[in-house]
Length: 349
Image (cartoon, helix red, strand yellow):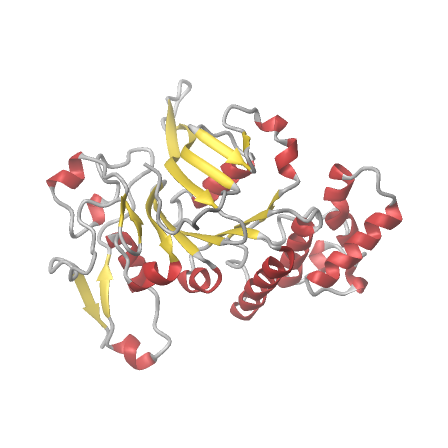
């Protein structure tokens, strides 16, 4: 079942995904004849993406966020029952033949320095997509387009002939954004674009993305660990755990009234800006470690760390249901119920 929460009425989605799966072969035994097992990084994800919105994706490290983004871009192999970009069905299309989509879907990566070729200066880095997709442009036309794009991301012309190692992390990320928007794409996938930056620079980059979204009518997929950043920039939020989607809904309703216990646990971990509230805050701590993705739990993948879990959770995987705030996959959702008395609480002294 595909989550239906927060779908804009009478609007055709730019992206339709059903039952998307990403698997990696892993050698998990030593010796001359190692056994190869399949690690399922993304398990049966399904959602729609609409024009002009920002879809935030959150979850702990290793939950499959980046693998999901790369699969949507066609950077890694994946399997799905439906993968459609702009009414073009790519479900069974080899990645090498995604040419028409490549121009309209661009990506901004997590590490601003390592995502840029150290051998190229800023002019060549930003103009590289033009050389690929618009080979008929002259050198002067490419330079003019680069200078115009530099202004859009708040950088000066004097940086044109600098190399990545001569720039700050914030400047490198702005260059990565400039490279992504120079083709005037419809969608940008942002894979934790601010996590490697200082807090003040994070705010600037987030604001820049929102500004570009308004000016260029961009649709964003924004991946992050930081729930505060996701709440600030997103319209809808997807919560992932161990390759599985736990909850999807409007950000205001989801942050105010989460349905899934895992979403609530993530929200409880966010520090309060008011030190008095933070001092007396009650924490719902998750017990245990994240299970190995090579050997995920049966039933609901979150049941080994959930205080609301019972025998049904351990045996049967929940299907998606809809509430007023979101779509969720849980046998025992919160939905106005008080937190389980079995929850582990800690109050700061």
